Image (cartoon, rainbow, N blue to C red; front, top):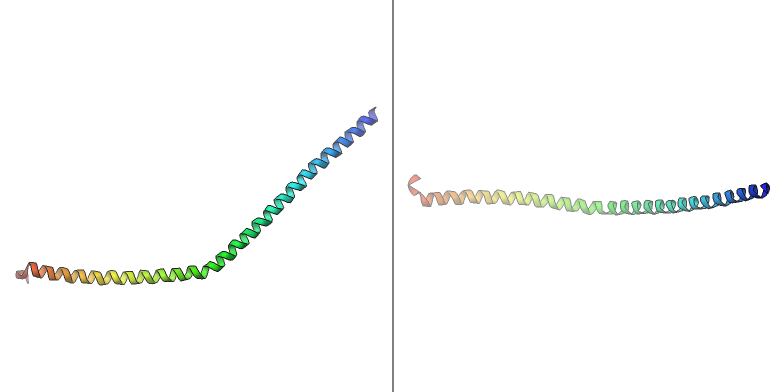
Length: 97
């Protein structure tokens, strides 16, 4: 009887360890797949960013040009406003000239 219980205990332990090991192997396999997919996604993102860099540089250069043109326009408008104010001052107060 003792032999049967010992053998049954060993069989139970072997089955239990086998099931536990199979769960661990499956979990490891799934994590490995997820890790590989993430590496692929990161690589794809890196490739997309490398392709976008020249386009982004063109946009930046365009924005710099727009800024410079805007500053020139502001300077021209400022000069015109000073002249207009000077003319209006003369027209409204000719005696002061």
